[in-house]
Image (cartoon, rainbow, N blue to C red):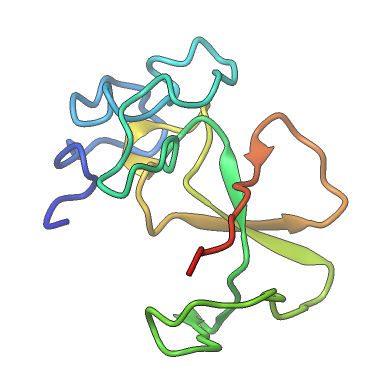
Length: 134
């Protein structure tokens, strides 16, 4: 997109401010509209690829690794992966998308964080992937 999110641009605000972000209301659960809890998937509008909850609700555990802030790529972009295995590093996992208690200005596709593999939280989820049929 050419905006902060697929719902539009976000208003500038302090990271600690939990104000309404009109661009997020229809696409994400965040501190202003979540009521402080996780919501069932697909209650908000999907992104242009038909994926729900890519921003807000829960962090998504992803199979990416960053080295000094630059993503490492194991295959050329657009190449289907067969039985992908992420790059092992320490005991951490990478997560993207933020969760229901984050402020609106933090909900961006580029937002990421790391946790240990043993962390348990209602704020962490994952997205199953299915095989491409030929």
